Length: 155
Image (cartoon, rainbow, N blue to C red; front, side, top):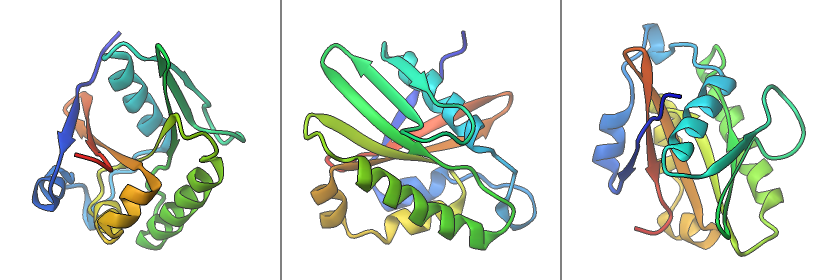
C-alpha cells in the first residue's frame, strides 16, 4: 500500500504554490475517485481507518476514524470546464454543511489542487472557515503518486 503524506499549509502564497500546473487551461482531468483515493491513502498513512464511498453515492465521500477522532470529507474532481469547478465547489460546500450535525466530528472538503479551486477557497473569509471549522484538502499529482495538502480552519 502506497501512503501519501499530508502537508499542512498555513498561508495563501504556499497554497497557491501548491497548485499544479496542468495541461491547457490548467486541467489534467483528475476525477473525484482519484481525489478520494489520494486522501484515503494520506489518512491511512497517519493511522486512520478510512471508508470511502466510491462513485456517486449518497452520504459522505470519505469517513475516517482514529480512536474517538472522526473526519467526514466531501470530495470533488475537476470536470471539463472552468465553470464546472465553481459549480462543484458550491455543491461540495452545500453537501458538507448539511452533514455538520456532530460537534465532535471534523469536517473537510477535498479538491484537486487546480488553481481555480484554490482561489475559490481563499475567497472564503477566514472567520467563516473558522465558524464552520472546515478544513480543505488539495491533491496534486507528483510523478506516479500524489501529494496531499490541507488548509486547516485553525492553525
